[in-house]
Image 1 (spheres, rainbow, N blue to C red):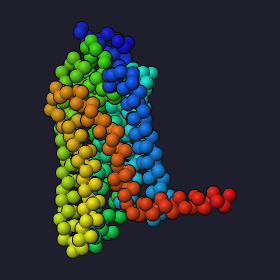
Image 2 (cartoon, helix red, strand yellow):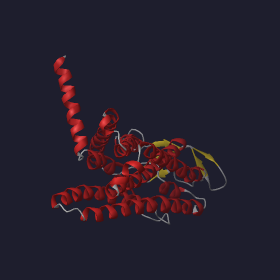
Image 3 (cartoon, one colour):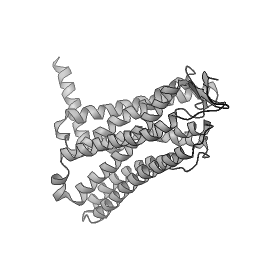
Image 4 (cartoon, helix red, strand yellow):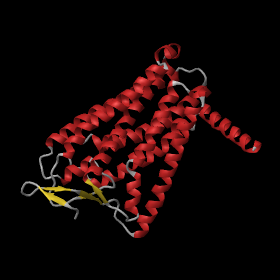
Length: 320
């Protein structure tokens, strides 16, 4: 049991919490540590490489790639907000986390996750304009508007999540300080609290409806119009190529929004925490790993830029 200070009768203000993680044998812990470490390295390396490439290659300085750069930059920090602590838990080094660190982790994980949902809807709208209204695209979606939309996504997300984060930080806890998760989640804090959590649960539910359902509707409506436009393409080869790209985008969107809605759009804290942990793995680890491959590395312009960059570096090395 972690350190605590006494509050009102039957209430405890813990100084630190214990993250349970995934219970199991030493072999299972080591195996999961290796898997998560490999996925984390690939996620950071893949997304960081895309950010550097998109910044340094002037041919990719367009609104679409600007949004992709924001998404890749976000994924690096989204995974970093939780994975290093998860790896420490698997090694059995440090399951404890201070109250302040727990609140900060919760705030950044949820803020970055919310930012991603806003960015995905903005990116879907950008593709809708480019495919459904190509003649007006350049006059509507210039670099100035794309910058404002990206900045608005970050600002709104961090502001919206500050509301439940402040409410969560004021909870009091009873008896146990063990969080049945591998990071500090809102559900876990609510389950541990011995004070009335109705206001927090309602606020989280309303915010999740606005964020997850709202951005999900914008995203999928945009893709519905995109698909309708693609069906009008006279060339069979052109339709197949467009559908190949859209299907991969929709697959990752279904994975992301499905897990996000399950995690956040819940009216009660009674949902199984074990199931929540499994879905959290998809949300915080798998999706950030897949995003650079789905959205960027399958793109011909990006692949050409990577090829030219590698050729230039090989030429420089040869000259030396």
